[in-house]
Amino acid sequence: MVGTPFQEQLETFENSFPDREYEIEITCPEFTSICPKTGQPDFGTLVFRYVPDRLCVELKSLKLYLQRFRNEGIFYENVTNRILDDFVAACQPRRATLESRWSPRGGITSVIRVHYTSSRADATPDAG
Image (cartoon, helix red, strand yellow):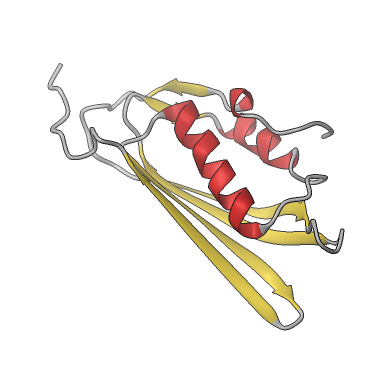
């Protein structure tokens, strides 16, 4: 998949249980981007955990969005934050965490965790 990733590529669908507090976990074990310093590929696993509000992320669109990073030169910290920002903009969850676990490079592994909490997260959901 060629092209630049952007938030509008993430599709959503209506949450059938917006009054219930529940967590969705999505694991993407084949994430790839390019190290901007060396030009070498970086391989990682992304784990999304989120509590939906009114919308859920459609998985095929998430897969296609993530594939667009294959040729993107971007550091671990930047790509993890950017993906969570786009994810939050698309589905507006109550809470979300993205963890990126990177394959060893030079004997060093990295794990990046970023968090988001909506100002509505602590509010009781409407009964209607």
